[in-house]
Image (tube, rainbow, N blue to C red; front, side, top):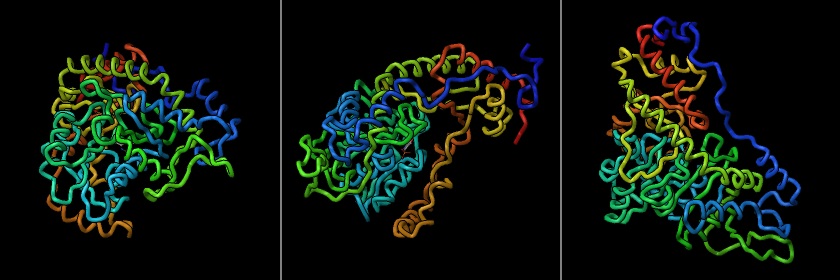
Length: 427
Ligand SMILES: *Cc1c(COP(=O)(O)O)cnc(C)c1O
């Protein structure tokens, strides 16, 4: 039956017409959480006390506990979490920070925002996370940190990075914006390096629309992180008598306002209570899909590092042998699959050195660094990041919230497109 049907991209009948699970999740419990804050008389940690502990503090405690670590400082978004993590280490002008060439732009732009120079470095070919060998080769006397990114549905090889950190004294910051709840040899992603940063932006696996956090087990860093995100103030359990304020000034370090509102925190607390169940289901569906796709031939799952005990599926990425698709560009293959399923399939972002999102020279504030960047990048090539962008496609994690039958539909669509390769329109 399959072989007679036309591809949906050419007007044929699609494999699937049913809806997919929706994202973000709008539940009655989420509505109740918002309502609770609305009438509480306090919408943010920087407002006067209403006698109760702010949702922001409660979420921080619960998220630290979820991760099995001591401290959490919520932030307005994942980008500001990265900024205060670097500020907590006093990273600034003249310093270099190693970041992967394949990541969301914020990993690198946060480095620019603290005045330091991001050193773009290639990823590895197995799971497309930062390569430990490439990172080691990029170290100079100016290197003040390495930001590893746990990308797509994997983790950077933390065994290698922790050994590298031990040998060189260079701290590792884990950008965990895509890997909340993933487990490396028994420890949660974000707790292995000196600090872990998170985003709760709408696309992430736990979300409040916008939001972020830094976690750490180091009490001194915790104190600095608090001041850095709340205009030099930190949280006190006893409100000041005169004005009821609970964020009180400190003589530590000058901060800025990156506070998360209590509406966001309440949504996150609600979502956190079901996160573990959600992540397990998504990981199970992804593993099933991976096994099925592998049997078709041209689809190659990531080679996951040995230490990864449980992955979090943010973007399910799989490598495609394009020779089996007569060499068609990955965008053409994605378009054909999208038409069969009414589900987005897309290639990974372009590596940052050629990304439209990463242009430090366009802002006067970054001119100092753009000189340094140009020097670094004239010699830099990122063959593995380029390979990912040209030979992989991604399925967004909400597709994995449902059933095995949903996964079977994806397999059927891949089979159909593969059986009609010559029909796939080149773009
Ligand atoms: C989403 C994301 C960020 C930035 O988070 P925002 O909340 O959008 O500022 C940083 N790093 C990675 C890898 C991300 O995916």
